Image 1 (cartoon, one colour):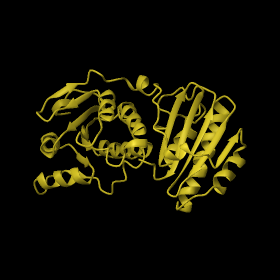
Image 2 (cartoon, helix red, strand yellow; image 1 turned 90 degrees about the horizontal axis):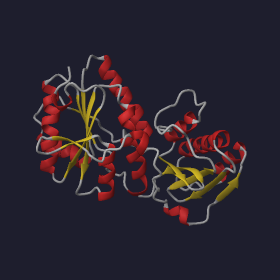
Image 3 (spheres, rainbow, N blue to C red; image 1 turned 60 degrees about the vertical axis):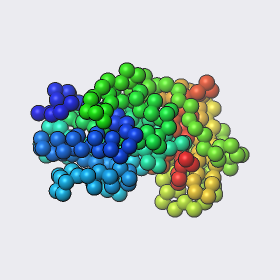
Length: 318
């Protein structure tokens, strides 16, 4: 039986938790987590370093709250969905009737990368809806810019307030609509320079060879290998499911490689493509899901000339 604001709700109860001070963070987090522990529900925290320290200091010893450590769960949106779905399935298999999670995607995910995390926040309304999850997604408005807060309110059906209220977000947009919009991505600064590689309708072997021959900066070999796979999948997907010509471009920096694959088609029909595996890949979803798993940053963009996927290995420029 579910408790608290999510009592009687079926599926995912997804809330934004915007706060402007450490006291407001504690006002949101402490009752949410401790009430969950008291009800016998798993209560989990995955915050950035500062928020986690504030919360640890305020919680009583032996509180029963679980902290996810290592900071890797929010390394990539698709990987976060995969990790959380496994965590949630394990809790349900153990008998949990509700799981409470306070998470924070923001630290480090700024600038160029924010668009993919806004897409994540929208997609999880669908991706987690088969679990009895109640989450508060924490956003520190002292650091999060207004445009990102606006996206947060559009991708969360409701907000938890520091005064204890739970209110509907009037600007909330259903995922199928939000993910279908054309959100102009922030360009990586490397894209303002001449590409190191510029190929039209390349064979897959040619695309892979071009990536391997490019300047890899300081990237480790295994990351380059993953990037070769991701670019190959993106080119194959464009050739099989897009509309020619297919253009592949690549830029190299000391700490990252950026590639774009563009075709003249409209892009995938499924708005969740890339973030969750889609069937057997017959409609083009599996290859892009693989790309999301192997790249540090992926952007999908529909535009007047067609569809572009941008892939980044290394450190996306913030």
